[in-house]
Length: 142
Image (cartoon, rainbow, N blue to C red; front, top):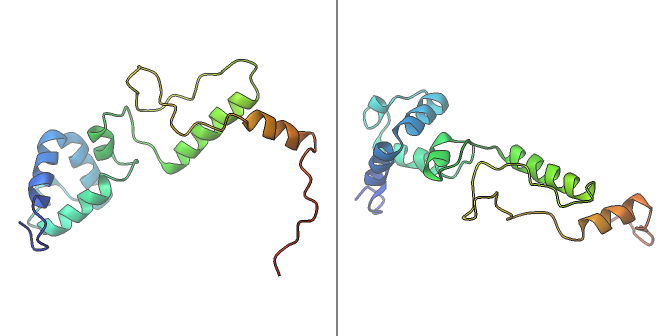
């Protein structure tokens, strides 16, 4: 047990090092300027646990990429641009276009459909293009 009374923090980090050594070493060297030999000596283990807890929630880290079996890390901007690309392709295509490739795969072997644009996006954008939305009776807050 570590100082905070939560069991398994250091043990979980050691398991992550064993299972994902290249990704772990890369992220610690690139982000924190630390090698694996610095863990527990230069940086105390409780701090290492905190740093790892942040890395495993960061989609731009190679550690999260390795844990989730993704092909490459992503940024939040990348995810927004991929969703924007998908929406643009859906609105401007007569057929159902393929989604922009994601680094993860779903069980069916294709890209996941979670978070895809609304079904009525074409209709909404068509109305907006044709001036169909009227912004009458809208007042600015005072």
